[in-house]
Image 1 (cartoon, rainbow, N blue to C red):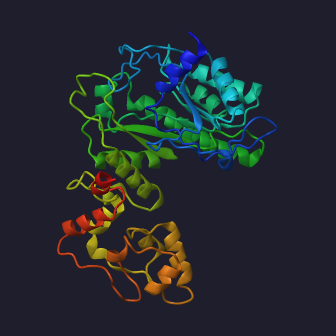
Image 2: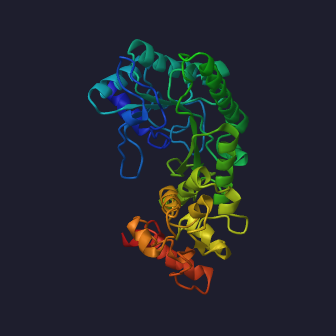
Length: 409
């Protein structure tokens, strides 16, 4: 098969893998090609918001597994192809020299065994780093079931590694991917975490010790292929962040690309649901929220009309309005429409004088979404709503991502 034909097949086969954002590395140029430092990555985005600054391909779409949701499953009748390690390395260098890409995102089907597949990934990374002296960003998918030694060897060559959890529950994984299990997925995740901690200690003693996945590890979860609610999804994400020091969990809305009796009748997940889950994930990582605060058993799905923080604020309306001249940083961060920059701007400015509404305008702080949740100098300028639902309707009209706004667009 011609190289260009392989490239066409294996780039198309990689399009459902979303966890390829190229940030968080500090690998600098050492008289070679490329620079994996955060400022050296040029982000480009496709229409649906996916990062396209990397050469994003599969090593092969051949696979011994038969996952019900995967277009590359063993029993699916698709054209198969496989690169050699040298071909992947040469493609990366040639594309980089043409200024098409800033790095490589490489995943793979499982060929032979997890260890044999990992050995091929390691060979690609070795060629790029040691033969071509390529210092650009490399993100590869680790293979569940591979040995700890191979995970460590790969981690010393690349910037970021991912082990996909695939589905939010072990029950779903057993149904749709019976050849995989959480034990095989969690074991390499834990190995990566332990190696990261060990590498920190090594570099304290030896400054020139090689870095182990300096951009950390990520994972991907398919949503909507099975019946888990949004609460179960963010609970799983919270557990992953806590147990494995995960840099990021990516969410991929289910797309019915293969026929399966287990997913029959399940439609493509609305992008807005995927978006709301990402917003909730942001609250977990940067706003100090817990999963059981954002959703609960009585309300296990996101209200698509409004973002999760606005929904939390309305459900806990008794905590509002908050006086911004006395609020703590944590309280300011929980006000709809306020983020880190606004919170810090308010705290810094009020050291000199109590703030008024005019001062907020001078500080370029918008109160459009916060107006019903704050007082400024004891003054409330929001509206009085008789029910939580009426306030949600009102907030939904001002949410650029709401269902109604998207319909209008």
